[in-house]
Image 1 (spheres, rainbow, N blue to C red):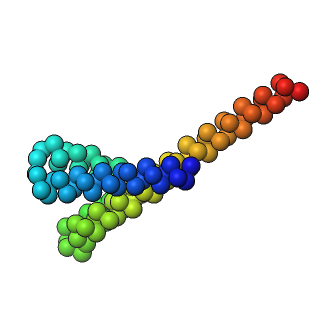
Image 2 (image 1 turned 180 degrees about the vertical axis):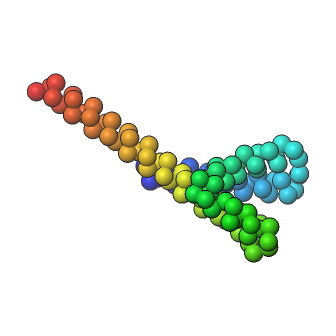
Length: 108
């Protein structure tokens, strides 16, 4: 479970880095949309936590740089993916336990 979450997090971040580099070298409407769609996951998570407005204010006031926002988005993405992996792993583990328990009872 931890390995899958780590791998998925690293893959998401790698795609994000590649898209950002490509956007800087070859600006296009497609890459801009792809970048925005990748940013939507951490932006929504930060919005739900009430942290997006202070982050936006700090960015527009010059208190945090674009790379700082990218770092926060990246860390938020890793946390969201790990939490999703934990929830899915817990649900699957619980289902597996109940199925194994039911099979054991029938086998007696």
